[in-house]
Length: 78
Image 1: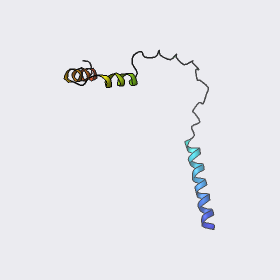
Image 2: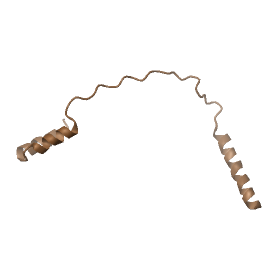
Image 3: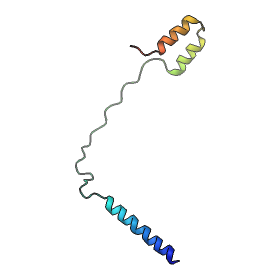
Image 4: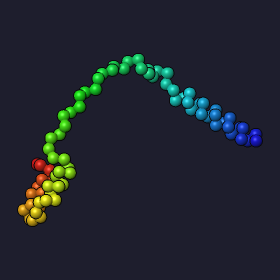
């Protein structure tokens, strides 16, 4: 019983020392915060969404020319 009480006291003392040593008295909480409104959202992107692009690709005939064009579209532009 005494060992458990001593361990509890030791743990609480350790926690108290940890909390007090981590606080910084020079830290200013909310004194110099400038509140600014958020910028407006950018406009929505125009073009096909992924579902429409996938449906169009599924309807397209599979041949060498179409495959080459699809690969060229996936390549990064230099």
